[in-house]
Amino acid sequence: MKFEDYFSKIIAGTMTWGSWGKQLSKREMMDLMHHCLENGVTTFDHADIYGDYSTEAAFGEAFSESGIQREEVQLVTKCGIQITSGRNNVLKHYQYDKEYILWSAEESLRKLKVEYIDLFLLHRPSPLMNTHEIGEAINDLLDSGKIKRFGVSNFTPSQIALVEKTVTVSANQVEFSLTHDVPMYNGVFDDCIAKSRIAMAWSPLGNVFREQNEQTHRIKNILAKLCEKYDAEESQLLLAWILRHPAKVHPVVGTTSPERLTLSAKAAKIELEPQDWFLLLEASKGHEVP
Image (cartoon, rainbow, N blue to C red; front, side, top):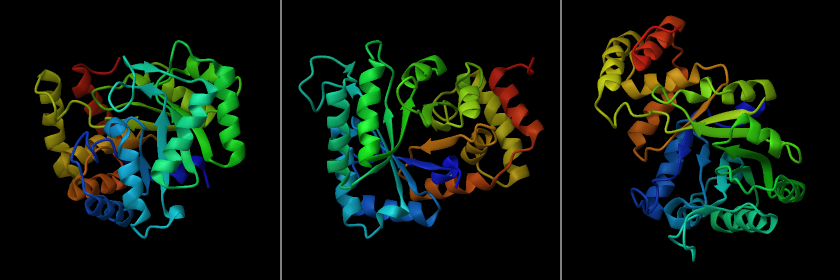
């Protein structure tokens, strides 16, 4: 199996499952997990900081009682951001020393109530990263089987190259959408393709439904025309636009609505024609491609 096929094409983001969002009950989380699996969404994206360091534990309690077998799902989580809420920190900062990385992984395993994490990410790059310490910690976790793969989030290709002096980087999760297309031009997706890294996209719908401006107005006008052509909903077409990229990007969708998750999963079956893909890009840019 190719590495990118190990994860579901659409990934369920858990950031708003807990206290940072919908505050789902254990029963609601269990039901949502089952709904995801029924729709082919088998990968769940976490970070230790979600819910002020509480969402992993809430998910773990629900998962342990869900009846879902561990091998049916893939769990992704991140470490490295230190925030003041939930811990005795005086300011937000990043921490990547060996002891802390090992401790963070153990904490995530304990909270999620599992024996291994499928993909363990460094959440954001730090100016103080010591790549040798990172490598030692990650290799220890890989050798012990506590994590299956290692990756990063929000890293540039040059930052990944530094980390890869000591350990293989299998994935990069970055912000990517029709309204935030930077990874297509700054080398991030080129690096993913060239190095066979899995690409994941957070905030995949961008600002289309959050803001009302000239850009989003242009995009919605084009979406209205394409919805009829593809018999699809607007958000599905935005996800299909991402999925069309040759980096085989996996969108991380943050909705907790079963209906929205069903629609998102179905987006994986839509293949935009090249001219329609560029039509949306042109609408976002406000001019034809160079």
